[in-house]
Length: 83
Image (cartoon, helix red, strand yellow):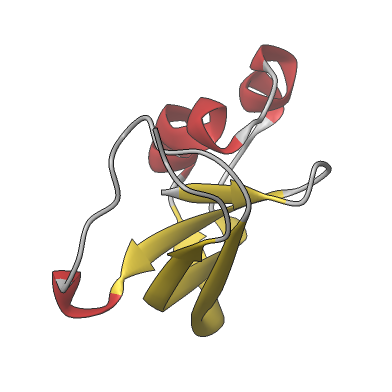
């Protein structure tokens, strides 16, 4: 899952894979978790870059290992009902 504040996007994983969020879920959320730094290889960064909002040009410019924030999430609360 990814979340965004409108300018930056962050990948999230779910602690102990204890819950899931639908692929098409969207809306305002309140999340609980721990943010830490993840080091990903250039290959992985280029593969997941588009899913966190990187443009095609930005993905092409990635070289070497990348340091990205990752949130290990222990809770997600949608602030609006989901369809």
